[in-house]
Image (cartoon, rainbow, N blue to C red; front, side, top):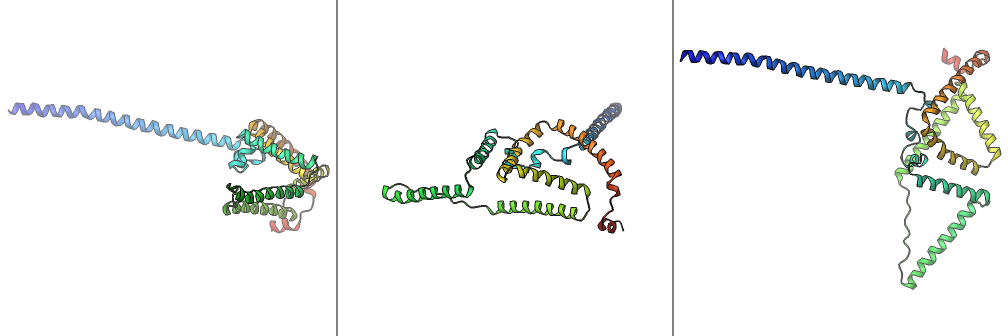
Amino acid sequence: MAEHEGEREMAEHEGEREREPVAESMADKITEKTHDHDSSSSSSDSDDDKSDAVKSKIFRLFGREKPVHKVLGGGKPADVFLWRNKKISAGVLGGATAVWVFFELLEYHLITLVCHLSIFSLAVLFLWSNASNFLNKSPPKIPEVLLPEKWVREVASGLRIEINRGFAVLHDIASGRDLKKFLAVIAGLLVLSLVGSCCNFLTLLYISFVLLHTVPVLYEKYEDQVDGNSEKAWTQIKKQYAVLDEKYISKIPRGPFKEKKKD
């Protein structure tokens, strides 16, 4: 009996010794896998950081950081401008063209058109509503048109932000803070005055509408080429501006605002 018990103890000790290296090998494999996973995740994170850094270094027109769809405000208006639905975009552009032809080429006036359409529609609805009682037919269903308060507030808030931003830019220019903005605004106003002398307000509005339906979608399609050429052009403009600043602009006496700011 004692011999049998001794043999059992020896067998148990040998089994424990065999299990220990197996457990150690399993633990080693688990640590290796976690190490590989951590290294792969860290390498993927580093790759993402590198890709983000590369994207941030890419020159974008007007310093744009968001996609074109987001720059245009997103939602359905941006979908129309970018021709996400070709039928709707073509319909909107065709309607604007028809309105421009109607008013500009046929020389019809807006107030006259609105009054005539209102008279015609009100007369038809009035006669239809009264005639339905004699003809035993259902009267016309006239929908109630109500502007949602949320939509009106969003539009008003957006207009307020843009108007305040424009006033801030004008204030900076009038205070003599930024010469570049001053020259850019003067150039823009000169171009706008030249365009305004060649066409009236309706034609200018129609041209702007057509540009909104053509320029963004073309830019989105050829974004990389346009940004690359713009970067080259911007580099040349900065060089020419540096020469101009060194020769002439730096010699212009500064206003009192900048002196106070330096003090």
